[in-house]
Image: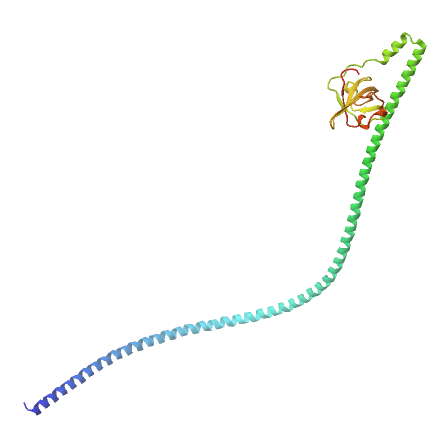
Length: 300
């Protein structure tokens, strides 16, 4: 084969390759166009369906908005009516506020007047309380003074009774002694004297055991007022010990019951433990209120 044949063959081969390339390219292009056309058609249908759906949604939304506008319009009308009512109420409230403010100002003045009256009442109450306290204190003092006076009166009455009892006892002793002196003079100191001595030294009946009493008041003269009497077995001439239990204890002497003996009390003559006159005794050797009285048990 000549070089021209080879060249032509090569050219034919090149042409065949070019033709095959364009054929394939055409097929591919047609195929791609079909796919794209189908895709475009599908997309168009979907777009149309979406547009229809969107249109329907728009119609629904439009109807809802229309209804909402109607509702809002109705609410606006109601709000307008409410605003008119509120405005009228506000006007009335302003009037009421002005009235309340005027009343408050008036009440404030009245309150000042009431505060002044209250202050005056409190001051008067405080003054009255002070007067009442003073009157109560004076009343208490008067009651205490009355009680003290009553106690002093009772003490004076008791002292007077004791003094009268002592005076009566002394008078009886004087009468007895006068009678005895007369009898001695009449008998000339004979057997009648022994009779008088026996009558004077008559021994009283024995006292019960464990008899115990106290001195009711300080000693007056030679006599002591004690807290036991006939109910305890005492009789004129009964003898008792008197002693002081406070401190270290002290025996003071003997008490001889006089004729002034009563159911619960008696008057006794004091005979000191030291055989001296009463004027020579120290004050602490004399019986005083609160000292103890007990049964001697034997004559002294």
